[in-house]
Length: 362
Image (cartoon, rainbow, N blue to C red; front, side, top):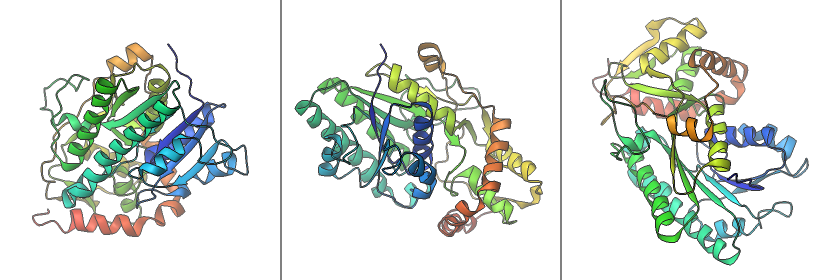
């Protein structure tokens, strides 16, 4: 049975995945309104949505509304769910919950914020939604956007993660996301709550904050800065273009089954060093820029996603091959230098503290 939402509340919509999802949704679904609830922490950037605001904001067709706020604010969440975000917006009939602290290295430096935002923030949204649906019952979906990191790590010959792989998070970040996922599951089981969980692999594409691997390598290589690569560079990730992730989320929203989990991956398992070399090749930069640094504490060796379920049941397939997607991504950063230069001071400060000053770096 197809679910067709009319108004979607996206939490964390000013972040990398959130802004791309909002743009994709408004471009492809002409009847949908979007409310973006974002606290605008360091990784949230309204500049990433300037085109969306111009085309769909209050002075345009009114399909896009921004609310500056924290997912841990219960009263604000209730207000938005009642439809009080703006005079032009309906009461949401779907939440796509993306708001989260998301960088593993930052979680190692300060775990408490990750637990507070990712676990308590999710709990707050669940409670606000449950209260709203008790007051104004309607067809509804709550889609929890998770991560493959909750499954832990794989050996070289292990089969890929499936939706039934036991959770075994190895970082404070992934533990906080696992906790959030389990809260969502508990609400479905205990309160018959209309929730679905997705777990995605590593995303890449435009508007990604330059502390993450691919934009970090691009922006540093462009100014001939050293490229810090953890350990031996052989940690393997499955790379998913953010636009493919957006289309997968929409498939889950509209056709996913309540109470179920769907893995989302790009089918591109690659060692980190291969990804870095691909960036250098695109830019025509030498591999001498690569600097191997002390490995991350508890660094998971390999992630791989089995996506048979979402492909079989929902008919979704990734459209980007990594070799084409990385070229397009590098070109975007070349074409939008002003965007990433304005956030580089923060990204470089983090890079220096996390990687380049690490003892034992080589």
